[in-house]
Image (cartoon, rainbow, N blue to C red; front, side, top):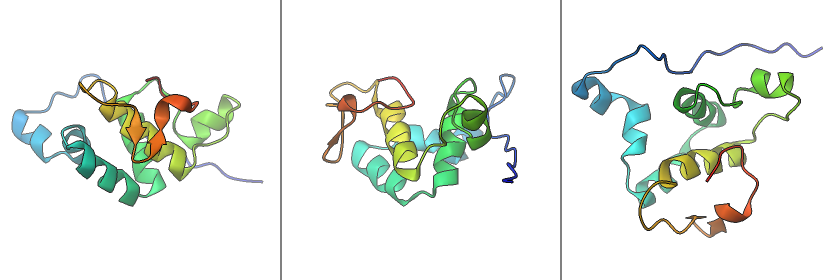
Length: 114
């Protein structure tokens, strides 16, 4: 029997950060990185940190292992989580071509919308 540990990473709706706090918060910093630095960072992040960011960014998403399993989905792999984080950050940027390095994310079925 596998025991699932519950993690609470999602942002709180009532949490209001000052500009200084926002600048020092790694989750917000990730949003402001240029594409090349973002790619470098997500490729170096461990799976749980990627999933933590996804859950924080979208409190209604099904990114945590226990949430995915309870909804009948397999947990995200590290590679899937990397692609999801990259896509979420880049999807609204002008001029983004849909690629993460040499992978066209628009051709993949991701856990996030593009």
